[in-house]
Length: 92
Image (cartoon, rainbow, N blue to C red):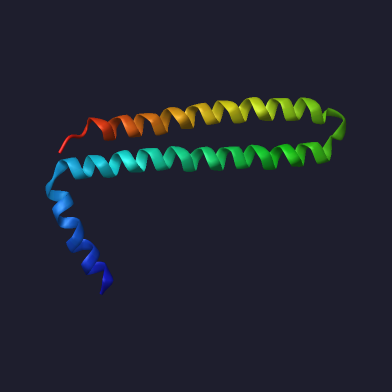
């Protein structure tokens, strides 16, 4: 029966479009951060696996992985910033 209490608490938010915009901004910022974490984790795992298979090219693999991780981090920072900017534009 807890779901009914949660739904009743959400009803005032649904009637106010600013509340929905705030939820959307939070989901945008959180989704960008979670996506970046998953992407960097996948790069790290693949990097370790590739180094284990070919240890002689470990330096090149590590350099490429660091560049890719920096690009993913930049995209995530952009997503989080846009989410917070949207949140800042909402006035009550």
